[in-house]
Figure 1 (tube, one colour):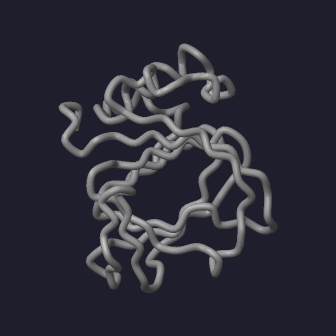
Figure 2: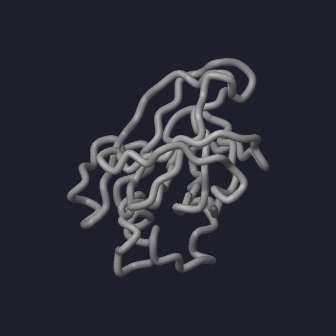
Length: 151
């Protein structure tokens, strides 16, 4: 798991997110919703809009085939994090590339517009948790294949 910020990204040359950062700088964070997956080559871009909820309404998730890159566009959310090795795994759904797990959280991260959260296959996460009260959240979720040459 890595937490970065678009305003300090020049200090890093992270290969997973450099093409994403380039597009955000070209188009602007507020225009990220207008891009499509073609803008990110072998990566899948999903723009998700939802209402944040209490942590009790969320489940642990992790993925084997993709790295998740969360880029908040509007609103803030808490993301619980723990390593897969600390949780009890459910069954793997290969079609959805999803493992739902059970167990406690080890840390929580609050992400805001301008932040970039990178979650690797070993990073179980519960996204979409409200900060204080439920609020609208819009974020880009970029799915980077684990076998990408950029990793």
